[in-house]
Length: 607
Ligand SMILES: Cc1cc2nc3c(=O)[nH]c(=O)nc-3n(C[C@H](O)[C@H](O)[C@H](O)COP(=O)(O)OP(=O)(O)OC[C@H]3O[C@@H](n4cnc5c(N)ncnc54)[C@H](O)[C@@H]3O)c2cc1C
Ligand SMILES: *[C@@H]1O[C@H](CO)[C@@H](O)[C@H](O)[C@H]1NC(C)=O
Ligand SMILES: *[C@@H]1O[C@H](CO)[C@@H](O)[C@H](O)[C@H]1NC(C)=O
Ligand SMILES: *[C@@H]1O[C@H](CO)[C@@H](O)[C@H](O)[C@H]1NC(C)=O
Ligand SMILES: *[C@@H]1O[C@H](CO)[C@@H](O)[C@H](O)[C@H]1NC(C)=O
Ligand SMILES: *[C@@H]1O[C@H](CO)[C@@H](O)[C@H](O)[C@H]1NC(C)=O
Image 1: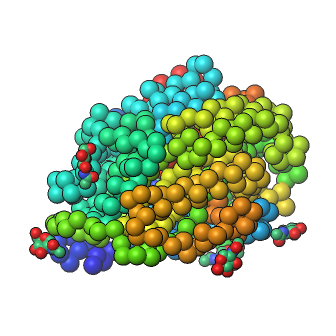
Image 2: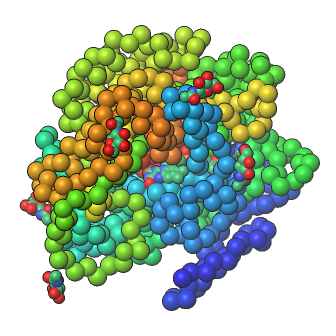
Image 3: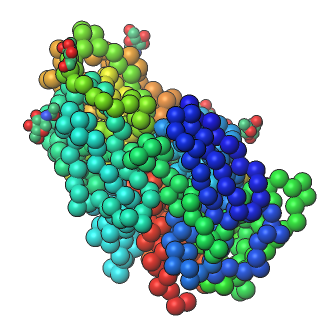
C-alpha cells in the first residue's frame, strides 16, 4: 500500500510520496502557481491546458533555457494511488474527471454517453487505460492525403516523432519466453531524454496462450513482429508503465515531475476563458480562478505564440468563445466574430464498442503450466489483441465499401452543413473507401482475454459528430453529440465486427469447448442484432478527436499543416483535436507524437 501526500503549498514546493516498503520518494515540482498574482505579465509561449500534449510541449520548449513558458491548467495537481497504479480503475471519480454527458443519441434509443476526460495535471494521460499502440502506416498516410501534397504527416514523417516521444523497454525474459512476445527495436525509441515509458507488465495469464493460438489461425490473420511498425494483425502491445516502479507513466511524470526550470511555470485551478487578439493576431489569453466566487479576469501576454492544448472537448469551446468558429453559431451566442471558421467543433470522431458475453459450455482450453516470477498487479489494459482490416473481418467488405462510395457526401451530415465541411467529408469519404478495401487499416480491435468473449471495438466511424458551445449558455460545458449511427455504414460494420467474434468463438481450435453466447445470444441476428446494438453500443472509447482538424481551409480544416489556426497569426493547436481521421489505435501515443512534432514546427517558425 502506498500513502500519498496531497499537494497544498504555494509556489515551488516539494511533495513526498511515502511507501511502506521503500524509502520515501521525493518529487520536486516545477514552479506550480495557484494564484494569478504569481503570474508574470508575459511569457514567450502560453499553453492552454496542462494535459498530455500541453506538458509535453512545455517541457520540450523549455529544455534549452531559451524560451519562457506558462501552462494554464483548469484542474488540480494530484498524486494519488489511483493514478499511480493501473489503468481505468478510477473511471468516473469526480476528483479526476470532468462531468460531461452527451446529448441523447437518436440511433441509440436516445441513450446518452458519459464523456470521460481527465481533470488533473496530466489530463487524460493520468486516468487512461494505459494501452500503448499506434495506428497503421495507411492511416497516417491518410492524414497526409487529407492535408495535401506538401503534407509531412505521412508515416515516414510521423515515425521519427513516435520514436522520440516514447522510451521503450522490452518485457522481462520469462514473460517474453512464455508468451512469445516479440518486438521491433527499429520502430521504438530509447532516447535518454524521453521519460514517457512503454513496457510490459511482469505477468500475463497463461490462459491467453490457447486464445492467441486460436486467433492466429483465423483466415487472413497476419502476425507482425510488432504492431508499431506500420502493419496490423495479431500482436502484443506494451502498457504506459514506468519500467522500474511499474507505476503509470504519463505526461506529469514524464514532462513535469522533477523538472525545475525558472522558465517553466504551471498555474493550476485556473480556467482560460478566451484568447485575446489584436485584429487576427493572438496576443495572449484571459483566465480566471476556478474556485473564486466572483473571479477577476486576468490577462497574460504571449510574446511568440499561444498554443491551445485543452483537448478535443474544450479546444473548440475556447476557440468559439474567442470568436473563432462557425459564424452563425457565434452570432446566435452573441460572440463577436474574429474569424469565421466553419470547421471548429465539427468532424468529431471516436472509437465505438460493445461487450459480447460468452461462457464455455464444455470444459475450457487448457493453459500450459508456466511459472512466472512477476506480479499480476502490474497488468493494466490488454496487452495482446487482433487489429484487422475489413477484408479480414468479412467477405462482404466490397459491398460495404461500394455502398459507402455511392453515398452523397452531404446525405448524413448535419442539415445545412457549410460547403467546406461537405467538401472535407467528400475527401474523407474517398479516403475511407480505400481504407475499407485495405487489409492494413484497423476496422476492428478484438483484445484477447484468458476467457471467452469480450470487447468488440469499431476503430473507424464514418458518422461525424459535433462539439459546440450552447448558444444559450456558452460558458457552460459544450454540447457533445456523437451522432452515433447517423450514417448506417457504421451499423453495418458493427454487425460484421460482432459476427467476427462469433466466428472466432466457433473457430476450429475452440470448437470443442462449445462457447455459449450469453449476450446478445447466438439467435440474435439480422434486425434483432441491430436493435441490440442500438440498445447497447458505447459510442466512445474515450478517444475523441478531430474537432479542430488539421486540413486545408477549403476542406473544413481548423489548423494548417504547421498546426497554425487558419486565418490567425501566433495561434496554434496541438492536442487530440487536430487529428483529421482516427488512427485504428488508442490515441495516447499519437498525441505524444503530434506534440513532439508540434514542438519542432513551433521552434522553426519565423512568424
Ligand atoms: C478513460 C480514458 C481511457 C483511455 N484509455 C486509453 C488507452 O488505454 N490508451 C490510449 O492510447 N489512450 C487512451 N485514452 C485516450 C488518451 O488518454 C487521450 O487521447 C489523450 O490523453 C488526450 O490528450 P490531449 O492532450 O488531447 O488532452 P488531455 O490530456 O485531456 O488534456 C487537456 C487538458 O486541458 C485542460 N483544459 C481544458 N479546458 C481548459 C481551460 N479552459 N483552461 C485551462 N485548462 C483547460 C484539461 O483540464 C486537461 O488537463 C483514454 C482516455 C480516457 C479519458
Ligand atoms: C454532474 O452533473 C450533473 C448535472 O449536469 C449533476 O446532477 C451531478 O451531480 C454532477 N455530478 C458530480 C459528481 O458532480
Ligand atoms: C427519441 O426522442 C425523440 C425526441 O424526444 C422522439 O421523437 C423519439 O421517438 C425517441 N426515440 C426513441 C427510440 O425513444
Ligand atoms: C512462438 O513463435 C514461434 C515462431 O513464430 C512458433 O513456432 C511457436 O509455436 C510460438 N509459440 C507459442 C507459445 O505461441
Ligand atoms: C507446474 O509446474 C511446476 C513447476 O515446474 C510443478 O511444480 C507443478 O507440479 C506443475 N503443475 C502441473 C499441474 O503440471
Ligand atoms: C433468443 O433466445 C432466447 C432464449 O431462448 C429468447 O428469450 C429470445 O427471445 C430469442 N431472441 C430472438 C431474437 O430470437
